Image (cartoon, rainbow, N blue to C red; front, side, top):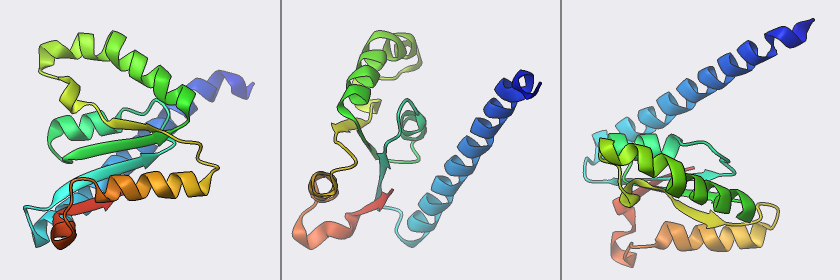
Length: 138
């Protein structure tokens, strides 16, 4: 009997979680930018599947860079989806390849591999003297 409510309850849960996470990220960005408005914001998402939060936040200008870590098959499927569907539809709205997140293939169970790839992302484009120019949100 409860099955008939499942889709509505599930979608409501997803909407609540989405709104909560979007607001939490926006709050962190506001706090960081109050201290130094020139700080670049990098959102790093682990195991995000088909979530398109990074696209939404990057397009809105809230974040400067987005990086997603996920399983190789998920990354391949999501890249294909972006190329074949999402970008085609959104080009009219001004979305380009630059708006897409960097997607990194990684087995999240292999901690050394995750750590190594995270280190490369966190230090990318940052000089040793200027490492504070980025604020990373995970």
